[in-house]
Length: 581
Image (cartoon, rainbow, N blue to C red; front, side, top):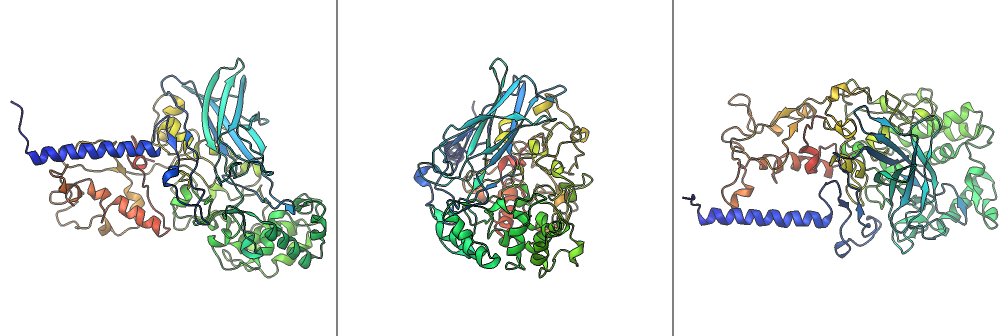
């Protein structure tokens, strides 16, 4: 005979089933479930927040992630933006400084055994999705082009893509998407992927020069702001830019080109050198006065793994004074006397003397990743800094550097600068994570979580990585109560990363009976609740990690609210097979 259950327990199971169904429907409707052919997007139009100076555009167009058949596909295609954010100054017709010149890179990999980049017999193309506008406001929906193989490498490039963060029909979107495809010589599709092509006009000149935002109260340099910039330049430097602008837009780079023969300092040195004298003693908020990085802004381009670790601009680039001095010292070496004038009153903050700051050339000598990541141990989040540790040349930058085999660029697996995987995009959580989600169904670095089979088609131990040495984070399995039925992959807990915490934060009942676990009898030892009311009870094992008052999620979310380093908050960030990264 079938066993009997109490009506109350039967009602509980029915209610739990109903809640699960409704939740899943809600996730699918919002495009929030990570899967090979999924959609990512913000709140639907009916529930979109009103645009304001502290919010992005009301909602972004839904973007599909191309499907991927791990059993049948012979190729994977990965694409990324070189800068992670292309700043554009739309101050025309007064002057032009940073034109819309987004850059895209891609690599096609033939899957293994023995995977290798493909450079011959293929054609790589890109296509902008949805409706966006050029600098002049013309729609560029469907703008497309072919990527060219970089000389001596295995990376395909598309430079000077003239896209703006405006839709021709209105609205602001700093993260337009591109579809990238690889075809063979006979036109057969080999692989398709999607990526973001970040671009923003949220350049904060108005914060000092007055005027309103040019577009939608969110971004852009208005005529009033642009005019004041020229007026101040004329007053300080004795130029006649206002008169020139009446005839044609002033080209800032015509003087500040950075070329050896140029009389004036490079654009980067001039801008940071001048403004540093008026913006001293600040931190990342100083950077956000000009750059579109403010957490309350419309762009919020700091969205990568470093942000989740509470690392801000100054950890790599230095405070405003230090950043400016590194650029000005390079200009002084080139014999430009005006650089010494700009540096005269600046006091270094990270070092004791100006001469302790290493000179650097802009866009060539950038913060070196190995300044923190020595591949011997994980960086200490509290003290890690790449300031004053510059790359030797442009080819050594993160965007151009290759792995130890010389095959794959760093962003191929790690994502673009300022959007390192797993990134959290303000216009849709997984917009930047589309490639890793497409190929491995979660937003870790490509191959992360022992996912080498994405390229190799066979499981390989991460200790055997030929790309670069991998520091394996020590983890411990979480002890489950007897009778627990898992609906997601088990979690491996990185105990060592919590070493700076008070043990009592997690082991809040101490060690009266020796080494205790969450599932110790009398603690969180119930594998499931017996009643509807029991879903929230402390003894239910799940609530040790997802509880409202105490738990991993509770702690991580609270730390994020305070702007501190925090652990993951997404389901698959923890519930990942082989998660030992």
